[in-house]
Image 1 (spheres, helix red, strand yellow):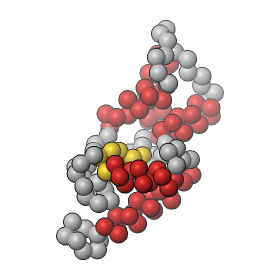
Image 2: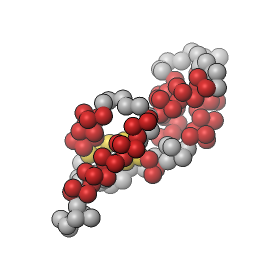
Image 3: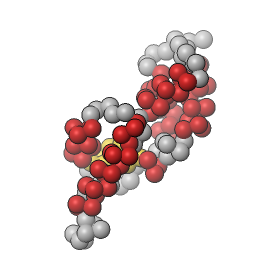
Image 4: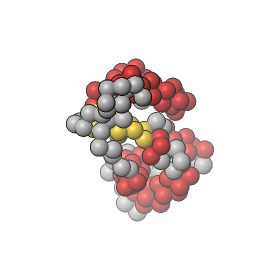
Length: 130
């Protein structure tokens, strides 16, 4: 068995990234530069709760590699594209300035509402309301 070189959730994120697809513009304002992905549900929180619930202790690299696939299969709906938003850096930073850098997953619905309200404020690409 080999030792972990990073915190376990980083291996989980790396594995899940292959399922992500960036949009070509910010979901809120349509900007095409400085795009970042935002998860409505924190992978870290989902992972840690899942480990605790299942009494898993991860101390070795091979354990993470095995468990991350099971974790993803059990959580893929929460981690799917409909819960993933491409945002420009300014909107992503604004979101986190309001809800915190790390917010609890119980706030996900509020965050989603905030994203939709911001999008509606910007209107469609023709300048009109959505």
